[in-house]
Image 1 (cartoon, rainbow, N blue to C red):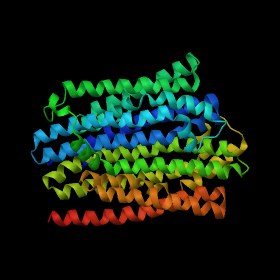
Image 2 (image 1 turned 30 degrees about the vertical axis):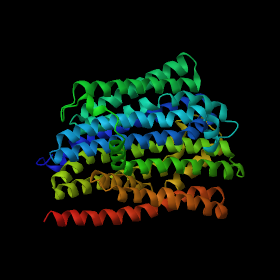
Image 3 (image 1 turned 180 degrees about the vertical axis):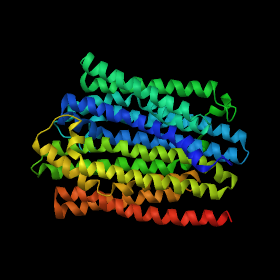
Image 4 (image 1 turned 90 degrees about the horizontal axis):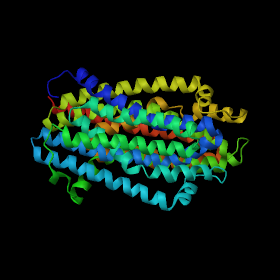
Amino acid sequence: METEKISKLLVKFCVPALASSLVTCMYNIVDQLFIGNLLGVAGNAATNVVFPVMTLITALSLMCGVGPANSMNIKRGNGEIKEAAACVGGGFGLMVICGLICMIPMLLFTETLLSAFGCTDTVMPYAESYARIISLSFVFSMIGASGPFIIRADGSPNFSLAVVAAGAVSNIILDALFIYGLGWGIEGAAWATLIAQSVSTGMVIWYMMRRFSAVKLRPSDFMPDAGLYLLLAGIGAGPAFNFGTQAIVQVFLNNALRIYGAGSVYGSDVCLAVAGVANKVNTLANALIVGMTNGLQPIASFNFGRGNYERVAEAAKKVVTVVLITGLAVFICYQLFPVQITGLFGDGNEDYYEFAERFFRIFFLLIPLYGLQTSVAGFFSAQGKVSKAIAISLVRQVIFFPLMLILLPEIMGLDGVLWAGPVADLAMAVTAGLLFVREIRKLEEKSL
């Protein structure tokens, strides 16, 4: 961590983290492919209205993974081995608690929550059955998604990838078996996810019990500790806030599409279905960014703890550069092939494909800059500077996007809903860019 060339370290950690992130996103992509091709517009709309809670699960998974992993590395960098071990045990307890917090309300208030997420009467029967079953997987989802962060921080990026890959492969096989082989439809996709996530969870628990090497884990490290939970959650709050506010954004977006779509030639269900496909496709682009950011974090946090500020700055600059290049490649795909991308997720009428073209080309217009939100926030989180990580997400998700969803549709109708995306992206990119440049200069000055 202290002496290896930064580019080699980034390859060592970013490649498995990137692969892990891509494989994780396949849960959503595969379910959408199977359901969309089976049920068409109704199926795509159903998974879309459940998507905000899945985004919330992702947010909390990042908090439960990034917080303990970064804390463990910083403690190790400072030579505090006993405290580092407590961070691992506390992280596991936090995963279980967060999973239960998400599961219980979704089971008890399914229809009420789905209505709040923008579900229409036509889509409700499909969405409700899917949501009730998949909520049972939330504790497993939390451990299966958060555990690999801690395993990667332990120096086993390949096993971290194996955890995620085992779940994803299981999900694909079970999707095909349950949906087509047994004819369970959309409910089969939910059961497949639940079982696949339990596979990943089993692997995480086995690794912690048998293979953890950076610190020695004892049963006492896993005892409940509310103070430690709050500390770890605070350190992981930056990336969690990023994704958590995305869930809020999706709720606002779904309701705006339902309202303004109803008054358009497309109708509410078509607009929701297209947004569902677009959101799931964009998880693939986001996975590229998240993977590279996750690979950066153990390098940045350990070297920050050691006071190697120049190495922290160098690693961050390399990752942000790659993120911007990746965003440009995604932009080109979205602009050139929106109809073809949408067509992979089931058939639709002429209006469906026409709106898909408008959605991809307008809403994702500034997608090359979107990656700054995750990568720069991750850079700050690795240093324990949570407030700056939160500020970046705050600008886009809490201030500009909801505000634009209120103002622009009043002037432009349904198109105003789409233009809210690039306006918010621009505001976020300016904020993230300024904070990043300023922080890099500070680190370089400290290293002199």
